[in-house]
Image (tube, rainbow, N blue to C red; front, side, top):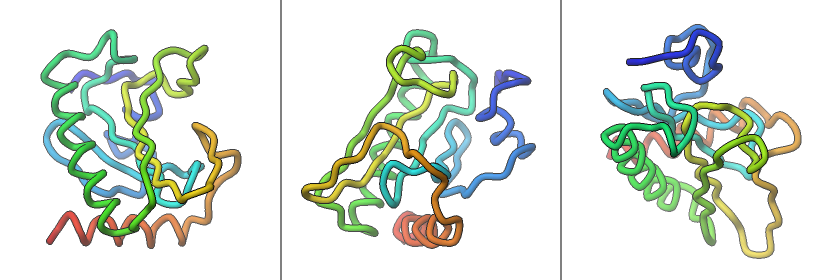
Length: 140
């Protein structure tokens, strides 16, 4: 794993900073966004540090894509949203706030208007409960 000492996501991977994990494999880690744009907002990251889509190696990109699809299917089954926003930003001007390649999975309800990122921290207990529901579907 190539990591950056100052990257917050690399620190989560190393266990230096806690996260509400959903799933993990050799190449990826999925955890809940603590400032969710919508209940159930999850992030899928590569364990290898790359700032964005333009820098990530193809095997790592494919691993993130596979995990994103797997987790999105679990979110659909666990939370029954009306739709999902799957997004990825490249550079600060595009809305990227952490310079480590990651994909957002944001469950959406009909009529809901949510920004790309949440405006305030979510309720930790609610986030943990949603993670448990998603995790249970993944484990079935």
